[in-house]
Image 1 (cartoon, rainbow, N blue to C red):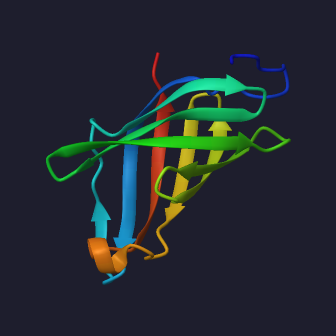
Image 2: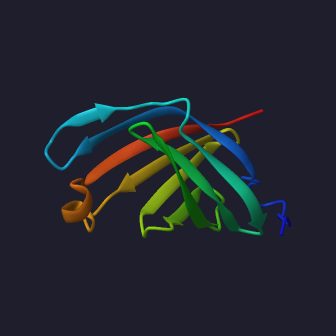
Amino acid sequence: MGTVSADIPDLKGNWTEEKLVGVMHNKDFFNSTSELDHWVISSQEENIILGINYFTDGAEIIEEPIAGVISPDGKTVSIADASGGMYTAYLTDDETLIIQYVNTGDKKGESNYAFAFEQVLKKAE
């Protein structure tokens, strides 16, 4: 994998978290920006991407595989993670992805959470 046409943005690389804000189902707002949270898009074939979402859960770093598809206009990416989470990402410029995520609460009983957040990622040099 590795072919990207001129009209499709090349998203391969490391994306570091600049901002994360959200709200839990119990109405508690949070801002949990962490320098440990980041995404690595390891491969891209045309408009299909694969990678890992690294995020902290307490003291533990979780590695969740992701796969996505870039829209025909090259500005929006629909992404699914290995546990069924769905993200919409907006490429605002060559260096910035704004990720929006809504956890539907399917795992609320098991994990005791449901939430929505917005995450800003910057492409690392």
